[in-house]
Length: 281
Length: 317
Ligand SMILES: Cc1ncc(C[n+]2csc(CCOP(=O)(O)OP(=O)(O)O)c2C)c(N)n1
Ligand SMILES: [Mg+2]
Image (cartoon, rainbow over all chains, first blue to last red; front, top):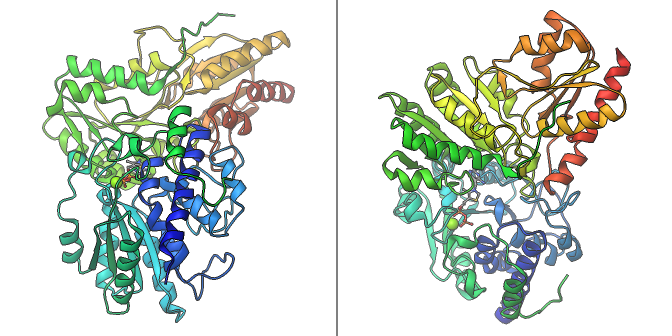
């Protein structure tokens, strides 16, 4: 059993890492990062069956792809604090010559990253390819991916989604960060996504909805349920209902902090709301 | 040597926004499409003034290009807006078939080109777009150098019938070309006359070339500077006229040396007047995160790099 209190403390530290990274270089994407903090912490600290260290092929372990690469601050924080690279390296986020590029990349060889992302809409396809490789390798582990809800507006996703069910890619769990926000406003004002659950089901996927996408317990239960659905001929979609900017009051429920850094005062306020738990980098 | 004055740093994308706002008032056939980057592309004013002529397509660039092609059938003049990477590489076949091959009057307006996009890093910093676009038959390719010129170009391309790729950027840079100046597609602008070397620059590198010209003069090298805002069709006459005097060339662009302005100039020289040429451009590499200035320095895309290249090419004559 997972220790919920411990995971929550982990999340609090990740939130600090997110706002500190973005503040230091006055660029990056705190909103989506904060909204997915609980999910990525639950994933890396409990859900994924991972091996020690990093191996690109990820044979005989679960692997994860981040399709919405702009939420790199949360990904980097969780990877560092899960042992993939030194936590101090978070200091170099978005700086010249850093391995922590604005969007995750394999180009600089950062452990934990298996594909570049940032140009939206490509991650599900990659995850399907990796899932097919696992099957060819007789590897029974699961491929996970996360994408944004605005990101689902890219047509390539739907090509992949159609492929996934048509070809029974049932070792794949794709989570969608349903925060209802993107750059220009809410997804409803930019381009309504309509019934996302109905769309995935119509495309032949099994869907698990996690209504409390910022609640560790709910995430663990939802992911457990998703896991039990693997191996049954269908890919699985997890609809993760989150709050953009979660855990920093002035960033919550708005698209305004999608890609904006806090100033000094705002940083202080964000940090005051999230006390140090694992030690700042 | 002529003196050019920076009237205050401005971003070229704001020049695009200002031009589009003006077009909204003067040309009712102009319509605009954007893929969830209205603020970054400075299209807010057009959207507010003409909501019925503004199409928010969501994060769906391929659909945007196809829709733009369709809008021309019925006489509209569509201006699409997104980052340069998502304006080209992301949608190459949609542009190729529905716009270029079909001969549609679409204006592909591309911001955040090159490494000066900065911290977002290589996934967003396209350095191959000029090459991709100039290879398309019938495509006009423009890369403007400052706010005023970008505004003028935006307005000018509405009056030209045919597909256009208009490339501009994110950072605030020197604004030195005339306010409300004229813009003639395909006509290079000679900014400095010189006798020792011709510097042929485009986009953000034009101001750097003017700075380099001053340094070179102090070193006793007389450099001509040509602002190539239109990479295709390229103004061969202007290039050859200057090269006839100087006998060597430096090309400067925020783009890969493969496929960029430099190679287009090389072809003109090879066909007409072969002379030594040096390329100030990225050397077949992706970009990375950093501040625009750091990246221009690291990738050799500034006045210092132009001075070095000019000194070298003069010695090769
Ligand atoms: C192909 C592509 N088009 C446009 C962008 C610019 N962009 C970056 S994030 C974003 C919005 C993404 O919305 P969503 O997936 O909902 O993520 P959230 O804002 O919720 O973090 C856009 C349009 C991009 N990165 N890639
Ligand atoms: Mg979203």
